Image (tube, rainbow, N blue to C red):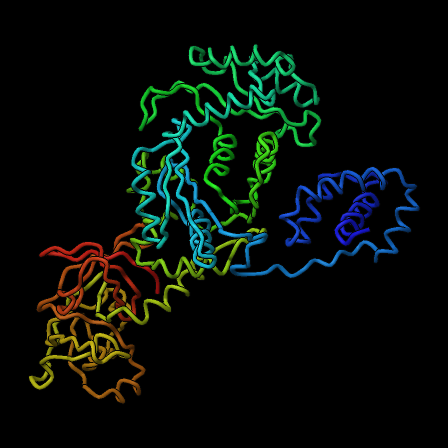
Length: 559
């Protein structure tokens, strides 16, 4: 017995012992894949071995099953530690060809970033080719603006592709292969009602259309253009006894009465995803397919098509789901929210779209590093904003110049401020990079401070205006107290932010929950440009979103 057969044999015995002596093919496959990630590329071979071994194991007496299992170490299965990061691709032979194939239902979100970044990095590692393929063969799920938005998102992510295809321009190719499949007797036209076919399918029974002559199916195929939705579909022949009903004789082509944004009413018959994807992956020479584990059944469906045509099956690599805390990644829900006025657009800061994340000042390097760290592991991953912020902070700390910003301001006038204290305060644009120069902040009696800081003061309380003087508050009056920092420390004075009234710039900051904070930023911020990311001292990082003569708008990134 080979090592692979022994692994399958043990999992079959464990499954049988747990289920009254009867092992299940599907359960064994899942168990082997979950504990031996390195064997995922051998799925087809494992399925064949499992089928033979299950028959053997299920014919055993339950006591013999337990005895055999004890010889192999009992019920425990050592689960290998799952590799993190960008693990090597399995079965690399020659040039690696990968594809990123989004549906143009909207812009890309952080979930798409995983596939996009992993494909990009694998191409970089192996010196292969990346294909961008827009899968738009369902006219009802196409947003005309998404074609451009997705390319913009990919460019922001630093993803470069060597070839680009749009599936709606390849319809004639899918027709050609549909006819070939019919002619081979591997596909048939089905006129059964959906409900009737489901009943038969669930009972592992073929529908009456399955065994009709090839000529009959070809004739109906030629007439399909004149049919209405649901009148007929083209089905790929699979195993009607397959353990998963969804695999049984799946739909390859159907009629869609909907105008397509690119091709208009030119076509009426559209391929289902599993058909067009398999045909394109073969014709484009794709060697490895990175996809979510929710596509496991689709991969199996596509194997039937590959086998019917005698094509080489690409290596399928399935990874787990990616969830993001407090962010809805559903494109349809985001669209509905935009239409209902809940969100201001695809770049609303509450969304997990790439453009929303970018608008907040999150750098693509942080997203790339995050996706590289998660890698293509099959277990689900939950991404926290805290993790994103941590990666991004490392980048922003170095590039972001510092400025004073006072949100929700209250104007104060310092009484008895000595003339000697009035002047220009110099602070570095960045404390670690003095070569960038300094900012000059006028200091005088009229200042803005944050209303919340003012509320924390009681009569007689001393506050330290950062880098300047100590002031006291009494019955609404602000008075000069002293300029000594040690004296402020003795008085346990709170150090607070301030901005001079003179030359200050009106500003607003859009927060992650889409609320807006208004205030003033110091005069030297007049030099900032759109897309700069600055650090407001004691407030956080923010990206410059818009600059006018009257106001600067920022988007808050994080602390």
